[in-house]
Length: 187
Image (cartoon, rainbow, N blue to C red; front, side, top):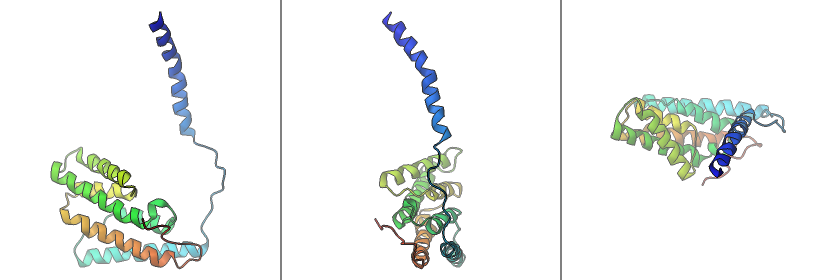
């Protein structure tokens, strides 16, 4: 009799659990309006992105390195939302670096298989979460490492070198605005 009651309670609670789970997907009502940056900040964001990505591309041509698409996403964070925690120098540099390590390690251990790109990306996320250096473009850095079957040097060039270039250009351009202070913190 006791087992039957537990089973009935479990069956009755499944629809409630499902409804609770599904209701999370509708989100919340926005309480604050979306705000556009002031024109000066938009111009500085555009110029910073142009200069930062151009510098990375020029360096890649000079030293015959690949250009990582993930730097485009990093530029959006560094220049578009410089106050965001994931746009701070620590996250940009170490997020990419740890992700590159994850990708290189995955290539060394497993090579390129149908599942190793997913392993590298998940490992990159794990390393970034554990080190508090989450930088979303890092996932693409790890994925690219496996898909391109890179070597150990990938960690330093183009990854760390490119991330440092973006941070330096971010320091120079973001601080030209009286509305911005970059970085919010170094560590």
